[in-house]
Amino acid sequence: MPHRGLPLHWRILVGLIVGAAAGLLGGSLLPPEADGKANASLLWAARNVAEPLGQIFLRLIFMVVVPLVFCALVLGIAGIGDVRRLGRMGLRTLLLTVGLSATSVAIALLLTNSLRPGARLPEAKRAELRGRYAAEAETPMAQARKSKTTRDALLDIIPRNPLQEMVGALDGSSPGGGMLAVMFFAMVFGVAVTVAPQRTAPLVSVLEGLYDALMVIIGWAMRLAPIGVAGLMFSLTALLGWDILRTLGWYVATVLAGLAIHLLGVYSLATSVFARMSPARFFGRITEAMLTAFATSSSNATLPTSLRVAEKDLGLRREVAGFVLTVGSTANQNGTALYEGVTVLFLAQVFGVDLTIVQQITVALMCVLAGIGTAGVPGGSLPLVVLVLQTVGIPGESVGIILGVDRLLDMCRTTLNVTGDLAVAACVDRAESGGR
Ligand code: ASP
Image (cartoon, rainbow, N blue to C red):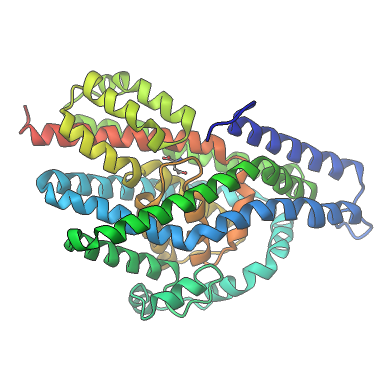
């Protein structure tokens, strides 16, 4: 979105700093109450001024989650459906996309389970945080506790009544698999759409229109982001002090470590094995696309640059690059999948929710799907993070805890997303040329 004055990401950063500094200042100037709890006036300001500001921003995002997930997945699958008509090339793209996404989520789970960034917040502060979100947390937390058997959890992915699942998806009151079931329905629907492309074309146009309108709403929400983030950071630091900032530091470090491992390890391996290209040559030639992705935080906005880099610098054939990169800019988002995995596990640790193996597998599955369903725009994954959180019984509102640092992570994960698209394009090009 064009802006006059300071670009949006800088304004969000200013919001983050101002909110956090004001909260810390308030916390140090206004002494805690006799019982050790935060100062009553500070608490009042946090609850009645700062939090509502953050809530307006968050609710605008929540508002679009369910329809957005449905549209994005149906359109994503319909896009990959074209892939089928392209035969082998499509299948290769699909396999690489799913394989790389699954690897990135595996890295996320391994790192977050071993570094445990969310558990670094002292228990007293975690209890305070749980208290604040208690109202929203109750239903889903309770749901999480009465964990289902593996058989039921798997069966529940197939919804009896998708509308009922949609209605309850955000507050954990769905009768079955909740958002996962909605995603399943959207996937089946998407596949069905691709089976009868001519007759379903008008429906696809309608969904595209709906999707665009939802994107406009997200754009409006993002304009409020600086104020929302300031409010959210104020209420966090006013009550939790430096501890929350240190914990967030660990979280950022975990995401960045994961992204670095995937970028340098997995892509180097993929390009040397499948594209027979040395990693140094690959990375050396795609710097322009990587930098554009970093600066814009948007895979879609980087698409023209990626297309040029693929053709001119990597020497890929136009039809391969055109196809793989276009589909990839929406469907292949390894950085996003990795980031979502870390975020959900991190917030689970912060809230002291012990995720069972089945729940962790659910998270992994949803993150891979979310990678396919996420729009390639700044902050595109936030609605999907909310829904994965809800699914495993963590209050969606808690995404506010990480919002302040999201822009930086967005820049980094988008760089990975775009690099992944180019890596897949290089691999597919090599395979299509029969190892030329
Ligand atoms: N900004 C990301 C992209 O465009 C999507 C996201 O993870 O928010 O690739």
